[in-house]
Image 1 (spheres, rainbow, N blue to C red):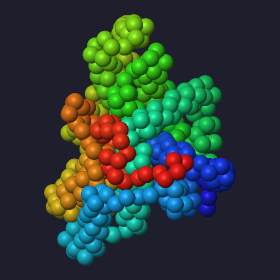
Image 2 (image 1 turned 120 degrees about the horizontal axis):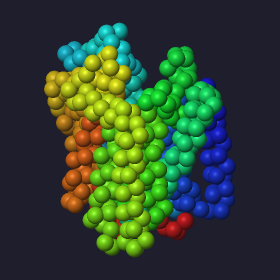
Image 3 (image 1 turned 135 degrees about the vertical axis):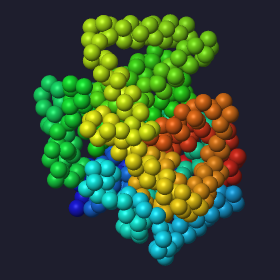
Length: 470
């Protein structure tokens, strides 16, 4: 079964493919699809495209297909990069060995299986089970292959600073569109109906709506209906961490950038998500860093507007406390409660602690599984593990994580000097707010780019040269 959005995507892809092929501009087409694939993997986090395949899988598959067609056309020549190939081979061997161990080892640790809800385990309706081979392992391995192939085929972009900067700029602009979209949803949810827009979006995404109470009505938090049309729940607004990392890398360069940056904070509040609100310290850190440390080299008008916005935010916060101190304190108290529950667990009776306590449970189980299978893990796609880092440790093991990082480093050439504080902050967020599978989606390419070295010559990696520059 194919969804409406998938039909639109495929039709548009075929039209553009035929057009760019006819004008002999396949390299430009490949660049467009690369950008589109990353944007789709960031924003379309639910639904089914074709049968049970996600839109994320479809987007990565279309890009890899485009890259192979471009490669087979003879216009692009791939030179051997021994280090890149070696680490890719190493990663493949470790992941396959880990899955083989999952199949033949009778003493695998207990986990929350990928097709088991962490919520049900937390409430006692589900249970921790021994790690076993399932269809989830095949799906996860498939996505990992598509991810690694896509990154490899994109070295011509990722090894060039100007191309990488354009990529991050395009993704930054995609977030602007997203802010507008959720504003429309916020208004419709609260002035008209909390189901009308969700019903439309979910129908074109082919979302399973069997649980009507959970799927079709936007949740009411803090006295208003939050925004969740493109995401299964508000906490996926936490993907704004990608936007903040890009802003950190590119800075607030103009008054327009400042406007959208402030808009992103409004979007966090519109989500009604306390997990999303944990991104506020990061946004404040970036903003203060920009106006206090980086502003001296900027334009005078931008510096003035940044300072004005800073005091405007402080004044607005003060007015909020004065006019409705109880509401403001509720937001702050509930946010701190959720952060505490993320770290040490919490009480399921509290609606604000509940989801954080479930995440804490998932992470603890994942870390326990890692402790019992340190080197190989339990196999990619075996256990949920809410946070990316606990999930990677449990699924990949030390050998899998090391080989994956080495492969990525052979392409992005990570450089953490000057970004150590940002790295620590990023690790903290990745431990608590995003699920493990994002680590092998195109959605994380912007994150890798932010921490990549600013080299500018394609020959640095010695991988891709375009014979005709088309």
